[in-house]
Image (cartoon, rainbow, N blue to C red):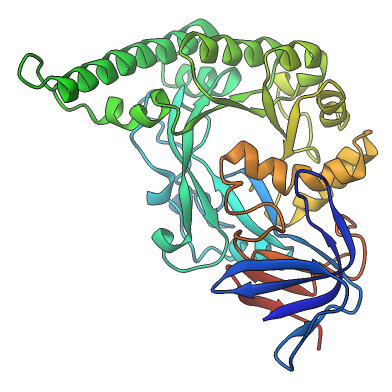
Length: 388
């Protein structure tokens, strides 16, 4: 099928906007993108000049892991019995039947990273998923990384239990200890694979095994960090262990934007619409994303759902625009930038041939509070169609 007569914000590397564009969809993928007149049939859709953009992507949520309005029974975000749990998987806690998935789709959010929480120094495996489906294996795009946390959250969680870590030093120490063991484990596995006659396969360790993709740079380390010193600790640890890393929240990133740019960091900022609910949020401002971008840091914007409900992702991007971020960059922060940071830009995040047909149509500003998509597709499947 084709969607034609659309103003297409491709979100490609050139920032191409096609004023009178069309896309062709085949087997759930975008097969062609073009401009001008094209041959159409009765099965095709006239966009009527509307704005066509990729589905929105939220690069940091707990969607489906914290159930909506249920309380403890449906809160599987934090396994708060052990500060180091890299082997647990968000996929095992996600409930695809949570109504918040529908609310995500209703606002054009087609992909998210759903993550374990931040009570633990190492929290578990993050899943990149589509927001449509009933079976997590079919929704899964990839296992995107491992969650780490610095600052107040681990301190508070384990101080209440009278266990370690109760300081920033201990939190970082636990992370370093585990990463050192994981690097040695990876070296021993490689030595056995290269020469199994003279080397023994190390005894299986679920926690270390789960960390191997991180050590091999097949996944990223996602560091929850608000305060500037915690952000720089995340960078320091990542450099020491040669990790691909993502800074999550980055609340005081505007204070060290130049330093983060020097280190080639990327940041997920947000949520922007929230209160200063704890000491490390004292310097929260909607200007952070703009300041980071001004210095050359790649920025995505998140809701941290359910901290801010998932459907308000575009509103958080609009808040960043009010804080000085260029409008087009705000769109990128919830499409292609989010995809790149999440490591899923090969399949989603822009309107380009070969990518999944995750798209949406608007007759007004996509970031406006009053806007809603009139058409939403995920993997080429029509989820919302209010054009007729």
